[in-house]
Image (cartoon, rainbow, N blue to C red; front, side):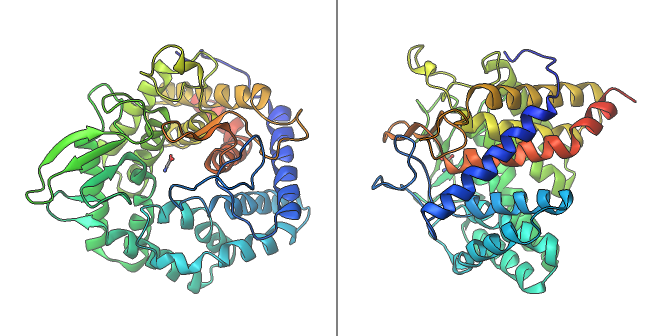
Length: 385
Ligand code: GLY
């Protein structure tokens, strides 16, 4: 269980975000035009397989975060923007990509952020198309968006990508798209989120009848276990659904997932890679799950009407960030090319185990940025001041 009540250490969070910015700058100089997924022995460029191509938005996504911070601080007006545009624009053909279920990851981190700065209609069109392409994964019989592995499969990770469908529905005034996003989220809630708030990674349906057959996993320990990153995706993703719909069922689900995460995570806020893995294996942590959960909790605490619960989630998010900053970055390891050590991609395939992973880097930066922008005011609001 996470311990409660850490201090908001602005200097530590700022120093870490600065380090992150520096690491990304060094990366761009060393590997121009390269979009990494995970490190091997701390190096981003290697021959290890990707498994699936879902991470390309995270590198430019971080550049957009740095750009906004620099604008607000009045420093380096174009440095990050020019690079962010170059690396985001190169992803545009993927708005039509039907091979992956990850178009939310790719375009909400890039074109959504870009569009907030420039309001160019062309960028919004890319986002709308990405949402329409995602919606083509919808399986009427089972009422779900299928995963990249096969049409009978649903992944918990898809909850992070339904937001691009909600966005496209809103921007193009398309009720059919919105219905697809809602129905997928309700199907996920019914079949992948368990009563105690834990989650299954995958579910399998009958293609013939649409009947739900069983829970399963690729990246978790077992079909009936709770893979911590999947849980963090659910926490964050159901809250996003709530932000778009105000449907209390999604807020309740996000909270149930958050409560499971907080109860089963180590006292410093960094979870084992799977909560039910054998004891020895649970020594392997996943810092990327911690970063995603921290970012999700910082959003969830703002959505909650109850200030006490809001303060609880806010404080645990800060505790997670303090732990990540103090104990898990590469700040004292000049040879390590990533920002956050101790992430995990795919234990079963032995990909990116105890390494830096791109989604860990991105959600860590997003959470640090959110904490620095809203942290103090959130604490005051939650304290009723
Ligand atoms: N494919 C999403 C993940 O590895 O978390």
